[in-house]
Image (cartoon, rainbow, N blue to C red):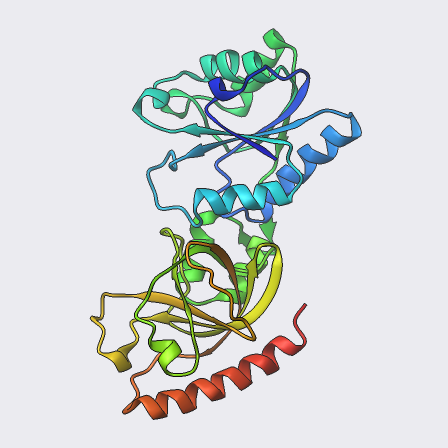
Length: 304
């Protein structure tokens, strides 16, 4: 996938594309369904698919996942191009009509535009499906409005999923996401306490992604497209008398000895093993880590 940060970074306008528009925060089942529909049509008609997304969030709210993580998930769904529009005050003043004319039509000449039925765009969110359909008469594209999905009796939304993850309800969050709850973060230098205990860990900067509740988890880790398994701790490491507001996330990869400082890891949360707790001594902490290790191996044994 070719990522374009701003339409004017595109060297040459594309012809007869299939465009899809949305924030796509978290890439939940509803987003994935819309993207799948657009990509399937583009491939059937031998056209290029173009995802148009926005960063930061137009509603000025925290995102479920970082932009880097969002782009990685979009790419995995087979999109050809992704235009990232910087949502600042200047862009917020662009009308729906000018957005369509001066960006979508000028740079991508769409044959089809896919949009969620409740998505709003343009100045004061005046752009609706009806507005887009009216503009389609002028500019010669077709509109595909995708209905909002629900999972049985529950609405699928990034807001609801954010609440579920923060509450530790991973199974329900996974059901609405259509994928495992995961964090994409960068390995940073830490105090190397895990190494001293015989369990070296990679300390992670999660780039403000939403994290599950504190605790120890059995996890899958993806590094350079290769899968590893391990245990992850989220919390304040109370045995080491850390300040309570100094939350960290660290992961121990089984049978792994590479130097990965500065590299990105995707951590998929499979199951919570236990809550975080303060141990009376380092030796008792090590004994518990051994138990966590064995339990994680049992949990992960039958996980694909």
